[in-house]
Image (cartoon, one colour):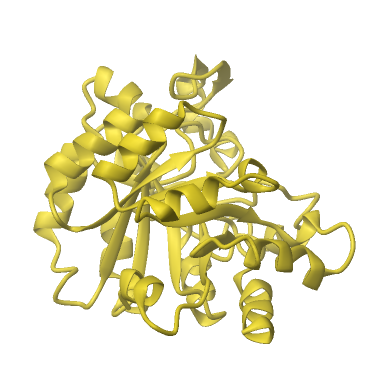
Length: 298
């Protein structure tokens, strides 16, 4: 499926994106979460890419591992625990993906990041491997699907001699994803990183700029000249005209993240706010619930 065609087509409807897969039901960023999201009606799935010590791309939300893997239960890796930064952000004591080879990371298993909030997902702790971008692009369930690849902390890793853009470009050249009917969107929070990804990876799909906090409106305007889309933290768009401004510039606009646990009244009221926002696509942890509301409101 070409997400761009759906957004621009005459029968436009809001799109449902499985945020790190069906992360409300399975440990996030696993092949099992991605496959379930598609089975639940998601138009696309989103995942996060970080590098390994030996130049591979593992699918994890951050470079630290303690909250989404069982690394703490592996005594053979105790010596790798250290204090380090989360990208350019605050430091924490943890295990970091950039200190592990892919073979070492493949011995770990995924865990639910929010076990008290999502005990149903936590029941699957320890069952699923940590996938790579190769695994996702070659997965049977990905045939004919749209995948949204988010590069995390690209500037930080590049400064450490780990060029994520170049690694991703190599992977996309090596794997026959186009022949398998897969279409892509590439995202990043860092403007310059997204520019580099666009330059290095080339015309592999849409490029979408992620905006988490209030930013320079001129930067958003510049993004419209360079990138096909912009994706806002939903808290930025309530009671503002950011969506309308971006669409007036010709951009596709996505918002994130719809989480059923945050509904204060009914699920239908909660999702309706997202659906009626005017966004072209919505990232959701429970794509089945959002998809049902989209159908009911269509």
